[in-house]
Length: 361
Ligand code: NAD
Image (tube, rainbow, N blue to C red; front, side, top):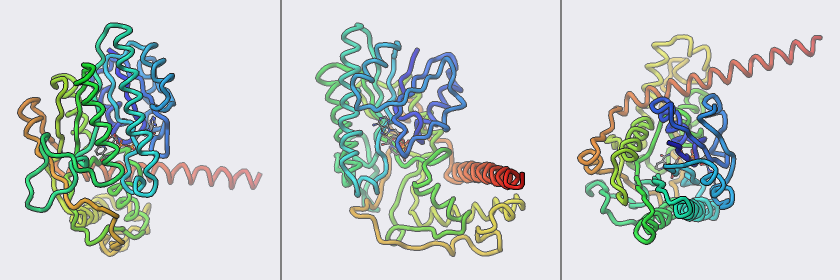
């Protein structure tokens, strides 16, 4: 079996590639990724081998996509590639329309034509977001697969449009598709500009912790490894043409989430006294409270108040439920970002030492 994974060098794509290679090492993976600001080849460089190929390219390039599908016997496409940052979509919506809508359509068209030419089936799984359902009030029931689409940002509008095309290709042309709508992911390899990595990094560097508005907006957080397990279940047992919501079951407002991260980092620094020397600017290195860094900033335009996922369908039909508690997922994530920062510091120190030695010579 050969999987084509678009966006495999981004946050969730990287975690999925690593998950798949670990669980199904005999299966071939082709990663197609344009390596935008959000993609990093180093995320997957250590995995590249005969069974895992990396192709740098854009999903809007129809010749390239057709070549890849024709050259390799692809049986499943898992489509992660997207512009994914809401704040960027507010500043610059055009690229969201190009990548998320036109890019998805280019893939659908190519998959359909290769299927027709080779008379085979290619399962197209589309990764979407709960943000297509819009925003909930505190007392509203959670989003189900039947909730109405009411996207509020250019990002969610572009994802909603791509979802409609994926569904339409199934109804009109019989393309075998599935779609998943997940809640906010967090975990290793997430881009530093997203909320949880930003908060961790800023605590370690003693920088302000920006929180939009009054911090009361509520999100449901899904640990990325749980998300990978859910996608695996959909690929193996999901019903063609169906949509599945995937949540972490961990609703929390932004302010409480940041408080939790502050406290967890304080605990981790007590358990590892070396960290105080390595990160002297972190408030907890000098017995101060990390939460003193919290700074409220002007709210995001059109900021959705609450997202919440009803995960009954995927639980009842496919037996998936998230296993990571928010605390365990956050601990893993914090540990991973601390390790990355230590590696960065070590290599920076080594370069500086080499430069200093060279100067002396
Ligand atoms: P990301 O921004 O970290 O990664 C996106 C990847 O896609 C990058 O590697 C980038 O280089 C690649 N890419 C962008 N444009 C491309 C193009 N034109 N051609 C080929 N590759 C391109 O995103 P992520 O957080 O890993 O999200 C992956 C998917 O999951 C997206 O479809 C996103 O909408 C969806 N999603 C994410 C979250 C979340 O919390 N991160 C939540 C719900 C849904």
